[in-house]
Length: 359
Image (tube, rainbow, N blue to C red):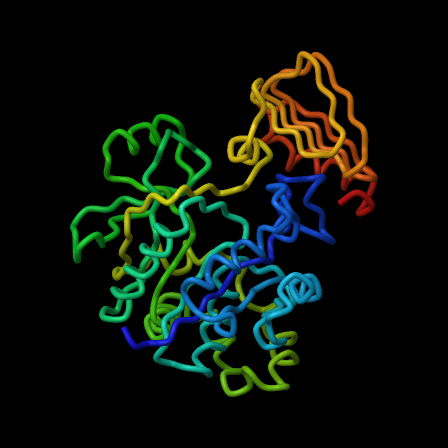
């Protein structure tokens, strides 16, 4: 495979289910969520250095976070930080990035990946990416890495796959977005379904052809500036035209409509780090299944909890079971872990009551 590879890391989300740790001014991808001394964005960036040089890694984020990206990834040039002027979901920003990369090398391959996932087995991850790049280089194909389900989970989208088109590469039959528990159980038991990790691999030509055919409204708006990308005039064009693109995910705009979608069933210690409970699952625990993130946390009769506190802040807890405790300088959250899906609504209620102060 002689084609050049570019990586687009998606880092524009707010992470509202991680409130109050994740805030508008500093979302979860810019935070050391795992307590390892590096943000999720930094960990993702370093993972892709096994695939291509730093000069080929682009960060797609909200324009308000460009400074945070530069602070955490000083290796990048300004042209490698793609700032969206509005949050229009993943379909417009992927199209924008593909057009920008086409101006650098129209024959290249492109990887799209979230900035906030955990991958424990990096060698296995790299091997699957390389297999996908090889297939995408030789076929008009949109490839996604599918995760072999380890349990029934209604929080993920599912990919049905069947016919093997190349060793380890299968044709996608359909996508199903977050099914109910009975449907998810049936999917997992069938062995024909994978979790949708949102990691995509394709040639730049294939994805732009897909946009032109399946989402011509997005393509038409953004293609008008094709000659301006990677030039001083790019920012002004995007500021004026990007907000007019539809607010839609790449799954709905492209992947669910395309007939050339393939998947590689994968296992590499993947987790979509979307909630406090998922962080609890992934982090080291004490003998009573507690995750304690802080310098001075003293617990007694506490079990199956996540307690997160600032450095040098003393936290004393007793008699808690299955709770999330997140102590921020201006917000203290104490919430049952079993009801963590409500936190997004709690954040909205706080915004309605107190405005933007705590958001």
